[in-house]
Image (cartoon, rainbow, N blue to C red):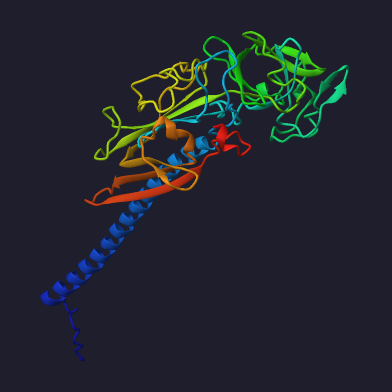
Length: 393
């Protein structure tokens, strides 16, 4: 009989177990480390994107507003006897607060309210305006001049039907300036417009409403609007000079960088908040304290400008962004020389550029480190009358 010897499986020695466990732990440690590193990189990338986005949001909003600075703002005096002028367009120029005038789009509109007058009636109480959405000249239709804005449009309104045509019977049509949300009634149910003459003088009047649309007026056969508040002089506003007179909804815009606990944010404060307010209510006296007058002290959210009651005459103080470590407004003249802020009233007309320097710092989660993003942008103003006449500011 043959006997076969069967060898038993060999067990791991203690040394082999120790070495194997160490290798496994090392591999697991490397894997966990790589995972944590990837998560950390992802967090930092997300945070960096968020900080960049917040900075760009501030820059885009301020720059978008500054682009309308001076638009529709007459450079002369008021014909009704106000003590001051609307110019200069920059009213407050402090390192942390900034205020200016211009015809900005209202919160419910994509375009500003500026239109060019085509004609003024003999009584001085009605204006025809050139359509700012159409490429065509007015065409005679049933004894009145209507612009065929359904055929050619500068504004992307989509397919237009006959009911979109701006005419005396359809004052609320989408192709009318007042049908685009460009003009808005105030808290007293008025729509205020600033009429600018060719020589720079201005008057403020309210547009008369009929239901939800301005009351129609046929001026020299063209569709227009009726005005309240007294007639305006045909000689002052050059009835015969088509395209020389403008109608605008003049706004005041305020920016203020403040501490979360209130008050202007100083150079040592962190986590400050940038606030914005837009006002389109009655102008009153441009030299009055609530307007504010040129060179006024810093205006913060603890104060409310005159003619700016929300929601009819303006917005509330609204937060642009929080957790700002540094934001500085800087001002430059036409030669690029920086003007020391706060800029005094006599120097405000010389402001040709505004620069914003913003720095935002955020803590990186699960670390003791922080991420800082800094951005600087400069915008150039046309503080003249739009024709390059700097002496008219």
